[in-house]
Image (cartoon, rainbow, N blue to C red; front, side, top):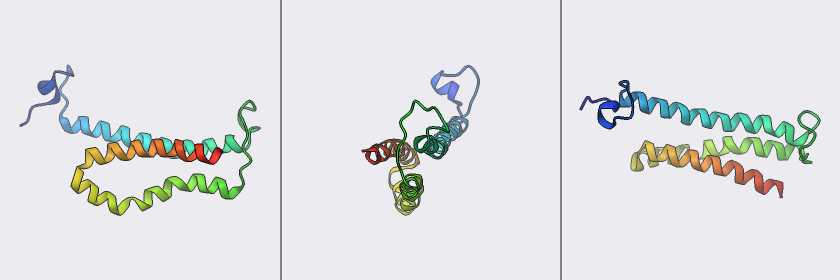
Length: 118
């Protein structure tokens, strides 16, 4: 079946293939993942030293070890999930795996930092 997305669904006025649509979604998915990683690195500077950012924000008294734990949590999760992810992708499909993994990553970052703040 060589129909384009516009012929199948009538969503677009111009012809885009399904591969283009999938490539665009994958690009957005990777962009969100990269933004999470970068924002953790930038945000931790403002959280431990409010003179470098807005002085109205609360400053946390985190030592280097706690800061390293926060920053490394993303990478440890990435490394530890590699082997089971291959099996899960074969079993459930890439679409479901990518959707669930980005959702868990987003919620996990927020939850991890929330527990460290208490």
